[in-house]
Length: 312
Image 1 (cartoon, rainbow, N blue to C red):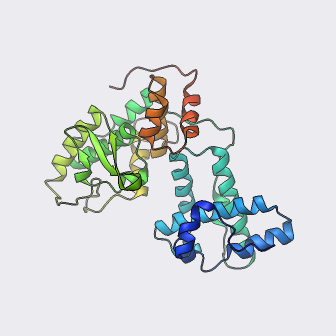
Image 2 (image 1 turned 60 degrees about the vertical axis):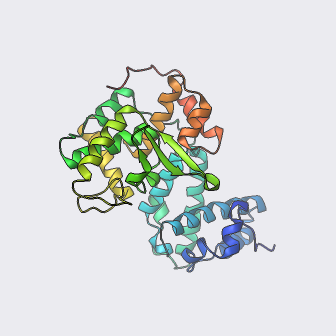
Image 3 (image 1 turned 180 degrees about the vertical axis):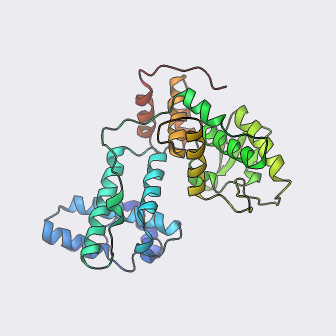
């Protein structure tokens, strides 16, 4: 069967312009792998198309992250991809399928001697029936109140945590925020949206106060028209990994025993909003979901949960 051109329809434009996965895939060939599956495993056309779509999505994502080699795709990189899919509200079944596809492809590359190890084997696959994990309001409160905002670093961590939970932004969006994107007058973030339109992301009074203090302290050390919002002691933008470490550090210090991540703060916000009567469509807009099915997962996760006291 002639497989050239078999790819996910959403990837057509990138493939046509020669951008995306081509740079990352210079050591391996998806087409050759699909032919192997067709000839040796007798895989159905629909199955092959699904594999192609999953692999295209991974390598286009990797290209955007600046990766240029299959050997750059470590277990940590795949964990980051998995986390972003979770933040986007993808179902555990979908995430599991995509990671399983990558495992198979990397195993084939390992057998051919292109890869020395299969980094996908180290990943824990999600349980298909796993419900959305949620922090209680008491746990959220403990984490948000852990940083000491009396110094610059504590004020930064406080503002970061408050904004992660208060806005529902993904880690990938938080790291690229600039001071000029924050409107403290009306408590919102102005971000690029679809079709070149601006997207307005609101946040609450707690986050506004934390940001106000942090920005005032930061401007004593760093300033500029395009100043990145969340930075290190050296003035460099915080990386995604740094934000993970900050979240985990304060969760552990607050005595929260769960495996807390930025994505867990985000999913907890969605569940809490729905528990307290927010309209699902409004929650969908806040979370940036492209599908109402993602928002329904959070709604189901909140069914039967006891509402806790408001965060103080």
